[in-house]
Image (tube, rainbow, N blue to C red; front, side, top):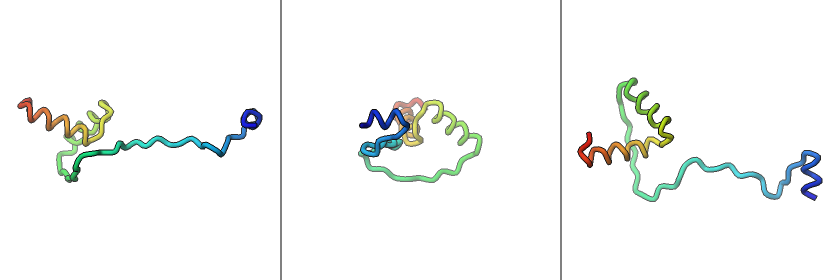
Length: 72
């Protein structure tokens, strides 16, 4: 029955496609901060996050790891 319906452009209502969740569940304690920074610096940071395809949280985590290593 589904095949016949698909041939005529009908879509089954039994199992509609589900939208993926973009956010991943975080299993750690989280807090929020607000940052005032120069626009140029924020634009560079946001562009880097976009290029790396990471969240601001993940970017901060990488920066903190670099600080711990003494790289910053």
